[in-house]
Each structure stands twice: as C-alpha cells, then as structure tokens.
Amino acid sequence: MTALPDRPPARRLGLVIDLDTCVGCQACVIACKAWNSGGAAGPLADAEPYGRRPSGTWLNRVHGFEVGEGEDGRTVYFPRSCLHCENAACVTVCPTGASYKRAEDGIVLVDASRCIGCSLCAWACPYGARELDPASGVMKKCTLCVDRIHDERLPPEEREPACVAVCPARARHFGDLADPEGPLARLVAERGGVELLPELGYRPTNRYLPPRPGRPLAAQAPLVEAPSTAGFLGWVDRLLGG
Amino acid sequence: MHPAPSLIAFTTLAGAGYGLLAVWSLAGLAGLVPAAPRAGAAGLLPALALIGAGLLASRFHLARPERALLAFTQWRTSWLSREAVAAAATFLPALVLAGFWILAGRIPPAAALLAAAGAVVTVACTGQIYAVLRPIPRWHQPLTTPVFLALAGASGAVLAVLAAALVGVPGEPLALAAVPALAVAWGLKLAWWQRGDRAAPVATADRAIGLAGRAPVRLVEPPHSSGGWLVDETGYRVARRHAAKLRRIALAAGLVVPVLFLALGLLSGGRLAAATSGLAAAMSLALALAIERWLFFAEARHTVRLWYGEAAV
Image 1: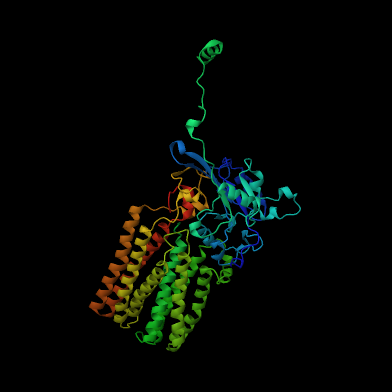
Image 2: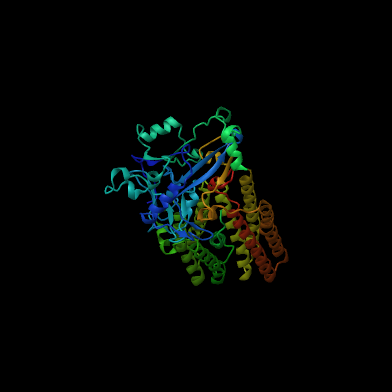
C-alpha cells in the first residue's frame, strides 16, 4: 500500500552525515555496494566493472565539491543516499504498492516483486536517491541496511548500516532521529545540522552537519619552510640536489 | 528529462484517441453526427485504435511489463494508478456506445456521456502524473493538466472533422469547434512555456548540499567516471536555441497550418476537399504534437542535476 503511515512513525531511523569530517574516500560507497549486492536489496547491476565505461546501480554516491572562493574556498565531500523522508512522494506516486514507508521505523523500501520499473518514483525524488537497476528492471534504493540493523543474530555493535560501520572518519552516524534526547538529536543541535531542500516539503529524516569554520590562511603557519642553504646540511643539499 | 519515445507515443496517441472519443460521443449526443452505423464506426473505431496503440506504447516504458496489472491497485494515492483505472473503466461505456452505435444505429445517452467523461478523466490523470512532481519545476505548474486536456481535445476535434468528411457527414460545426479548440490549446501551451521559462529556480546547488549562501559551489569530483541510469534519465540537455526554434515549428504546424486547412475545407465545400484538408490538418497537428511532447520531456530539468554540476534548477 503506497499510502504513507497514518501517524508519524514512533522511531525515525536515519543518518546524520558530517560534511566536516567526510574525506571523500568512497569507503561507504563500496561497503554499501558490497553489502547490498548480497542483501535484501540485491543484486545490484555492475556493468563493465573493469571496462571502459563502468556503470551500475549504487545506493550511495559521494560527490566532491569546491565551495566558496579564494581564501574562503574549501573542498566539501557530499555523500548522497535516501533521506527516508516523512513526506515521501516516491511512495505515494507508486502505482503498484511496491514502494512503501514502514510505520515502525520510517524506513522507505521497495518490494522488488511488485515493482514494474515505471521510474515514476525516481522522478518524484528530488534527491536522486532511486536508480532503476538495468539488470533486474526494478527500482533500487538505500534500505538503511534494514537486513543488518534489525538482525539479532549479529552482535549489537554490528547492527548499523554498512556505510556507517565502514566510515574511517566517523563522519556517518546512525540512530533514531525522533528521540529528542538521543545522541543524534544532540549532535544535530550542537553542530547546526540541516535538512536538505526543506522548501520542497519532503521532510527528510537524515541531517547533514555543515563544515566547521576554517581558520584564515594568514593565521596558519606557512605551509612550506624555505630550505636552509647554510652550513653542512646546506652543502649536502646542494651536492645531492644539483 | 530523457524524452522516452514510448511516453511521447503514449501521451500523444492516447490523448488524441480520448479527445476523439469525447468529441464524437458528444457530437453524436448533440445530433451533429447521425446515429448511423457508418458514422459511429468512422469516429469510434479510430478513437479506440488510437487509445489501444497508446496504451500498448506505454507498456514499452515499463521495465517489468508482465506485472502491469499491479498498477491498478494504488488509485488512492497514485495518479499513474488512477490513470490506469480510468483508462480501463472508460473502455466499458466506450465499447457499449460503439456496440449500439455501429451494430444497432443507436446512441445510448448514458454510454455517450460516460465515455466522454471517462476520456476527460483519463487525460486529466495523465496530466496530474506530471503536474504533482515538485522536483521537476517545469512540470509542477497549475497549467500542466489543462494543457494536456486542451491538446487532447483539440486533436480530437481535428480528427473528428476528418472522420466526418470520410463518411460524408457535414463537418462544418465540428470544424467551427476545432478552430477555437486549437487556439485555446496552443494559447495555454504558450503560457505554460513562458511560465516555465520565467519561473525562479526552486533550488540551488549550495542549498542542495546544505550550505545555503556558501556559493559558488563547483562540482570537482563527480561520483562516477562514466554515465549511469540516473544521469541518463535526468540529464537530457537540449540546446536552448533548438528549443526556441522547435517551439515555433510546433506552433506553426499545430495551430497555423491546421486552422488554414480547416478554413480551406469550410470554404471549398465538397466531400473530397473536406477530407483532404482534414487529413492535412491532422497530419500537421500530429507532427506538432510529437515535437511539443518531445520538448515537454527534453526541456524539463530535475533537481538531481544540482548534485551533477548545475547551479540552479
């Protein structure tokens, strides 16, 4: 049924992603693909992986941006995946009932056995979180690793999405964003976490933490020390350097 | 957005078919077209054929068409599902009407009215599918559904003139209705184009990455080195220059040429002249609708482009 849950879900499981600490290493992208190629959402298309034009389905992608100019300029890596919106139009536009939002934890999922591959849900998603899998002809999206986070056979510390578990910079945080006292809500409050494109009215669950302000260049130590040309080491330097 | 041939074919063919179904049913009810079997067949059979061809084309848009029946289930929330239900439901009165009209030479008023209403509702659902999509600002405007309805009605009226000429029914009232229908439809389309051109962007790249006001934002490392479904689907670009030229061609072929041929048919009299001019008007309009529908997709931009290097959508 593609109606959204009557009441807001008691729990709103989602991610808080720190744009300050994300280093764009793509580990979350790879871990996501690896887990979800075999998990509930899989397999994911992987055409020409070693060829000239590799392509395929990914549920999480990292974009590298340059933001600002001159001394204010900085690099921002932006991981993009499903935000598990409260007002998920991708669910309500679905003609078959394949797309649905879980009442218990707010996760938006696709029932692959009902999907006709019409692509309308991907058009309805402003964030580009859905991709039609060219191999299976059904829509794929982030499941928040629903087959991991609720699996009681796994040790508790492993019950988090693959992208969160793998992140070497600890830039990804997983939890319940409906809990006002929870660690995620506190993180969002402390760091001024933002909702993406609130003007579109989708009410996403995930939040992004903006980069901390950088120090001005003038206040920092010079990046390169001028090489010393005097003394014995200077002589060695000249001798070796030519 | 990617201009999928299946969707261009579906929306134009089914639109014209539902337009003709509505116009012919109402014309029969109003007595403009006689309740003769030949007259019923001349309008209703092409209408049903166009609708069938359009629905067949829509199947090619589905990656898993074998499950298409599931699309009838979610009419409570989904305009696509409502479109499927309305399309199927319209066949019932349309086939009853065709049966009575073609086999018995009778026009049951209820069937004619329901067929016309079903045609209008189905095309309105088609328009709503696009009109509710907020991430595609050019489609998300109040005029989108009226434009779909008006173009379907106008193409139905032009086809009705041709159908009347083919069976020797006096087509003057139909032609006199088709001219204002064309003018209204293309007038709405022109307003729709201009609104889309002038609309302020709904979102910008800095807002898309949660850093409002930190412009400029430049994409320096795309997330993948070659294409993929998402960029192919949303990344269709058409040169602005071409778009302007194509719009002028669509207006000329869709409005000016059909109106001239309809006037020619009205002035010249005679069945052959009416049929020839009606055919010319319909063919010119078909070309215009194909261009118009191609532009509908090709010019539309999706907010996902903000993460792929565009500054504003």
